[in-house]
Length: 180
Image (cartoon, rainbow, N blue to C red):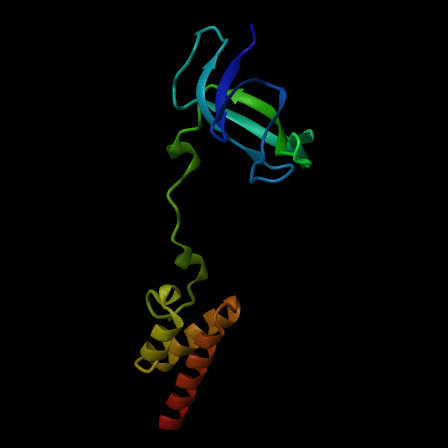
């Protein structure tokens, strides 16, 4: 007997097997993307049904399609009232890639994140500079010395994210030169 899983997608439950294709309500993932639906139960293996929350299923969106046209007709006798409309559901065709026994443990997959500032930090830059807003940079840059201002300017030029910060640092540098 092959293994199966019961998954929940869009408030509905489906019994799936590996390699199986099925139509479900439209998913936000888009064509070609893989995702992991909520697994309610796995079974069919040697151990029998498994209600473990660590079980995982990997699915891939094959295509976004429209369902079959449903025709709706309204009619009231002796009044000449006839109305016809139609409806096609937005669906996603998914394929079950794999049914696994357990999800990888967090300790294996997620190592301790290295501080982002260590890679991007320029020598002499003020502490916590990357987290400062443009307004905070404008007020704080008046108190920084020339090497700190130059390091902050180098950081901003390398990353080019905040044009207002560049202007504030350049004006602070110009003010330091005028004072010299």
